[in-house]
Image 1 (tube, helix red, strand yellow):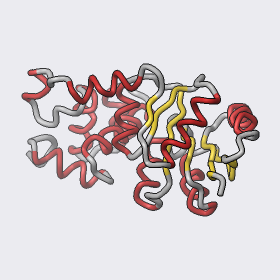
Image 2: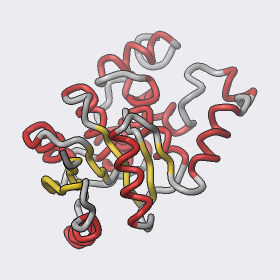
Image 3: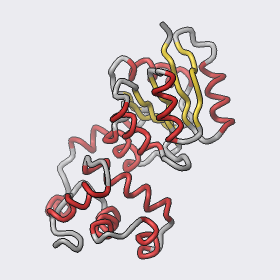
Image 4: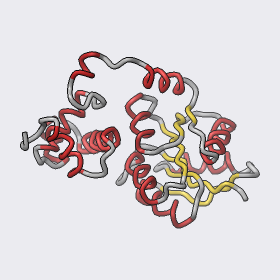
Length: 217
């Protein structure tokens, strides 16, 4: 049986090129396409796909939230991230959310095909240069300042956002307070959820208040 693949990316031309690149691979079949995370999670379940090639920056439900949703609703579906974001925060947030692999756009067809097969087989796959950073991240000793504070896995900005979440502010209010866009705040909130391994705002608030953040302190 061929491996059924879903392409999730909001750029039609990229999906077209990816579909064309996979068309002549005997053991892969592109079963569907999605332009946003919500559609991707729904189609992954409806079509019974084996793997989703997931972009992170999509409208509506972003890729991180879609990965998390798939982990809850269809844990047997492997997610291979294929994105422009080549930074540690995106990488580790995606992996904590439940992705089984992470490639940067521009990867060769052979590398993508090999990665698809690997994640479906239960392996974890990183693109060139990313594996070394992932290993360094998990083996490095924590910085003394970061380790000494509550929730050391969060960045300074994420701590600011979480403090305001714990105070009961919504994303629009946080954006105005910190002079950020709502999209940026939404991405920070998604990253916080993944790092704290919580599913929603109420659980994040509980975690925040346990360490003295927010109006419940």
